[in-house]
Amino acid sequence: QVQLVESGGGLVQPGGSLRLSCAASGSIFRVNVMTWYRQAPGKERELVAQIISDSSPVYADSVKGRFTISRDGAKNTAYLQMNSLKPEDTGVYYCNAQIALNIAMARNYWGKGTLVTVSS
Image (tube, rainbow, N blue to C red; front, side, top):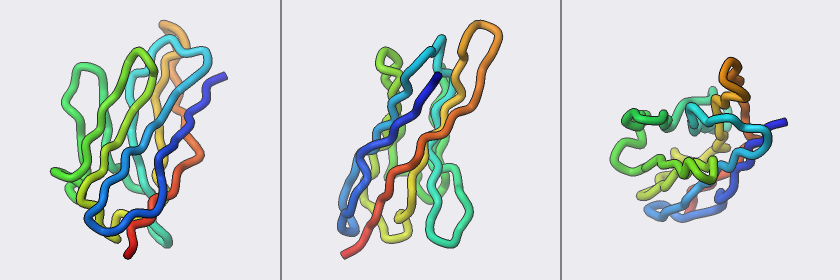
């Protein structure tokens, strides 16, 4: 059984910062890919940032230069540092991970999400 748990969301003023965490736990052989998505009210879920082992991170154009994704392989944890937050960054942020359960099988997992609200 594998679980993803996000944390770090909250209410922040425009221009402020937040740091989200996504911790994977359970019977993990290797975490291949970790991705942050977000879903604003009334909108579809969109990719925010993705990190793959041995590759450069990928960002949505709307967050480039403001958000930074990183990971701690030893802890199976990904982080999303969000700076210069804007009201349009408001939404539920979800963590997704592609996790190898053994050398031959990998599955995708989702966290339950953490709410980020950017408002004055």
